[in-house]
Length: 195
Image 1 (cartoon, rainbow, N blue to C red):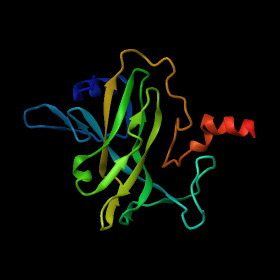
Image 2: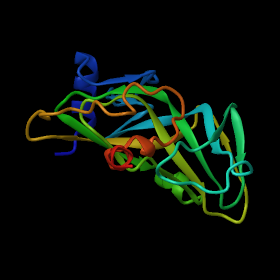
Image 3: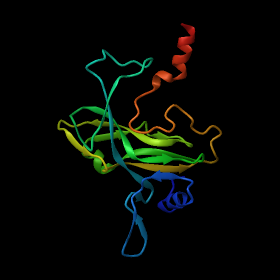
Image 4: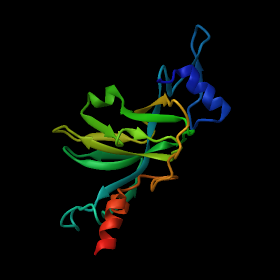
């Protein structure tokens, strides 16, 4: 079951769901509370100011067994060249309870400009941290991005029961854009033991 704005607000007020910072509410003329980030069935998240770019000039290739090399930088505004990829972070720190999962979706208005936003599309129950986003410019033209801009949304789904093993993985508690840690996967550890 996908959560409504009313349920999302309820969980935030109770402290079961944490999204911080979250912009203040605005009052619509009819008197209903309407959040600037809280949408009818999602919460918009904003682009942070920390980015990671693969150090493509100093590595011959990327493999799944070794850490990738990144260039880390902080900026309030970046220009993403055509057909380029970069890791970014959200401004918001998120903590999900053990009975909620979330889907990360790019905002339609941003996608229509040719900016693809992803994070593998999924946030496990029990996850806590900033969301690392994978940004790809599918255009022939550069795209200018500014921190603080709403770029993606979290859609929350109630699970049938609490997760038996809530998320405690390698990205738990992450701050800033976090590079791939696929080299820590169990397949690689098994291979190392065999060698």
